[in-house]
Length: 103
Image 1 (cartoon, one colour):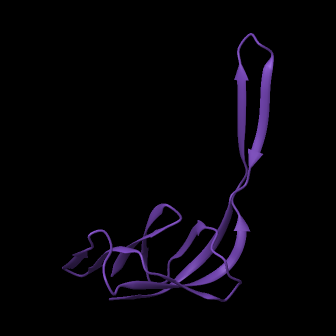
Image 2: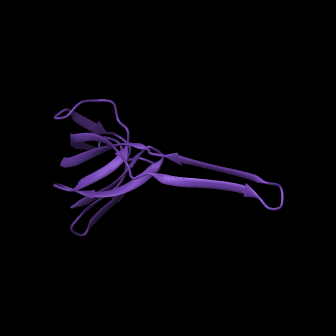
């Protein structure tokens, strides 16, 4: 059984027990978070697809840690103009363990 959920502007395919990294969700370690935007649930041969979300379906997850993703480097320049700019960015992420998928 797996589900497709939408969080942080992205879609994630999850099964029970998966550990996923999503954009920051408020909460502390050990808190339970419910995802109500479930787009699709597949259980064996039974496939349910929402339009756009499934009514009554939800996915429960437990926050493992609040952390940051690896740093990305952004470099901009304009040739022959002497313009160079280097910056970096680390996105705040939440690591979660999926506990339950329910219809």
